Image (tube, rainbow, N blue to C red; front, side, top):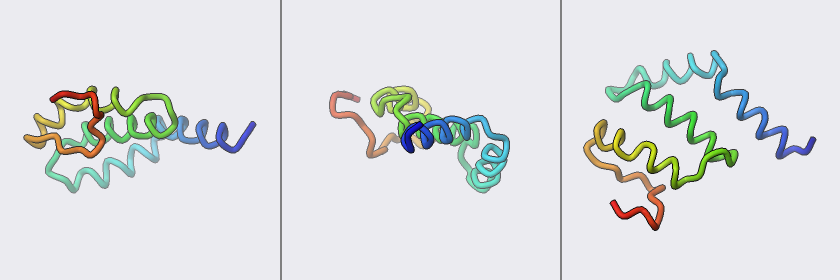
Length: 84
């Protein structure tokens, strides 16, 4: 196995790790915003970083939820072809 494959596999395993989940909940509980949305976006951000999800798909998946939660979607990840 290559280092890239090792890194990919390690990151993929962390997506369902209970310790990761607890750490994220502790951090996000201090926010007034949705902990669940933060966890979902965090997991999918890892998927983007390891190539399991495209940035375009990530943006589209969370656009409405980000608008609902924050009233605006000013994420710097907006794909060029995304017209909203």
